[in-house]
Image: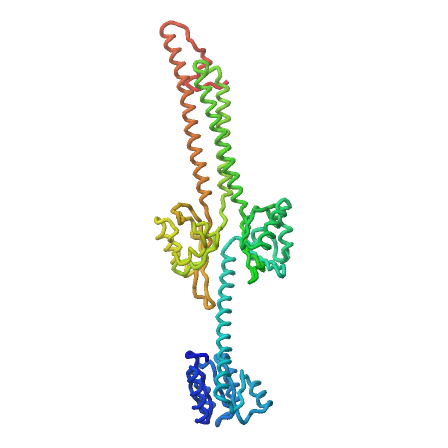
Length: 501
């Protein structure tokens, strides 16, 4: 026998003995009961006590049970109340149809045994509980859908979903923004996506996806070139997860495409800057060796030295232009998505976010304050910004020094958006975080190289000036002793400057 101590049942019957007997059977089964003898009293109790189930006698002294049922079902606040009519007089098929047509959810013909009554009520209670579970599941699903929708809006990545059974593909708005297509220019089919992959990458990408779908793994990722609307190709990092049914068959893939073209350009710029610096150091080293070996014959080879200096200066200019080019293309793409409570405690973390902060699995980050991954010197600032988010709009939080779980320092750039419920009340925060450590390291590398080049340049110019001054002093001493000057006047510039021929 089901025990239902949380279920209250309203028994509506003008026959006192029948009402008492019914209540006794229900209470023995573990239910709470209330009693009403008239239709008016029943409506009042339904509105005040809100019982989930009403056993309603068809014949009442003040109004028919059908009218009571209609009034209950007509009230939006009471429409979910389960109404079961009962009657011994109105027991024909047409009478039962009339009762059910008025909105009743069931009809019991009296007389009825205690065990049968208990069993029928138990069946109706199961319906109530199934309905309650369905509503809770639907509410949870709505929250998940809303969270996913806000997350897809908060990130700059192109979020996509592929239904393997229908071949339907869905993209978020960022897909159109990243690659320049209009809403009606991309068909919601897998072929529409694969047709835009660079031909040299297509076979590898298709093979990788097919291997994951037909296998048992749940994750896939690849880097490939994807055609924009203007015909150019973007370098993208695509990562996806596979959803499987109870039999292990892949039924859905959900992924995110990040445009890493800027990162590739960053890497190229750093490589070019490094090559430029290497060439410049080699040129300066060769120049220094020639100046040291020349000794007294330095002036005769001054034009060659000046040509080397011109090459060095030109190389230095190229390095500056390379640095400016590198700075102009430095951008960062978000790598991770994190959902927190309003006070900054992690509720959900994407796999990329967990990897970024050093967690082996995303669930290891759950329940921890997001600010604990910020460097101690910046935690107060980070928490202050988190506290201010609950009142408002999407906010760029800026750059932060961060700490991985193993103590490694790195830098991140973060933005956030507030998740609200149906009434507009803030309930969660969504953060998009990207790792900018490589960008900062590249910037420092170029600054260090420029500093070294300036030092080499100053050292070289100082050495040549000292040699010319020495030659002038030799000529002065020889002339003072009555001997002819050793160096021709054309070899030593006036005021100690290197002559230009």
